[in-house]
Length: 267
Image (cartoon, rainbow, N blue to C red; front, side, top):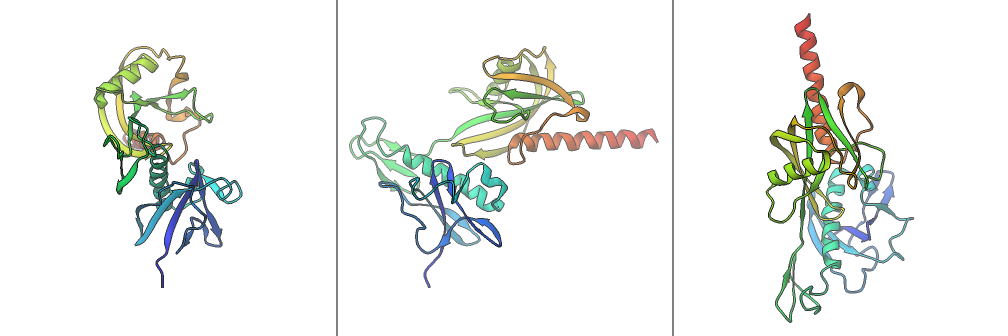
């Protein structure tokens, strides 16, 4: 009996999916479910419950709106382990598509290791690149700052975030981004958690911080809204898949516990 693989097949950010009485999944089969694009790598991305996962890009003739799901939206229908693997696979596919030619001399690259390509002409090596970005929950007493970035797709309010620039530490980036975008100074910055954000190739690094000083003055080209909210008047929150939501859920639980403690003391 031949080995079966999970196949994570993409056309841009559309993921080939299947549906059965057991719910949504990705193809599980011995052979590739559809042909790969010409020149594409078929890459191994890891395993799920002992099953090897493979990934590659295919054309729109094979992956289309009738048989696929947007990668971001797949969070809502796929089991968590498949969604997480889909994100990793998309980053590998994105790297493959954008590294077929050497950025130094334009020669066609060759695949020489699991996640490595090399230029046979100048020797330049290319590996998947990850862009680090910070996201910060800013607390002021019993309130939290929430913002709306001009590039947000929805009407929800989120948290201050931004990419780390060359030569910056994470702490430098936090101070700069918050000051640039909101005019506020913070203190007591603490690491919270990190999350791969494959849209594409970002590593979100989450922190909490406390307001120290300053009045909110928004950077117009980045934000169109910013305000402190208490737990009693929260706006629309980000979706559950994001680190922003995990930070906010943590803060909400903390506020509820504080309220409960105060009520017990008052009795």
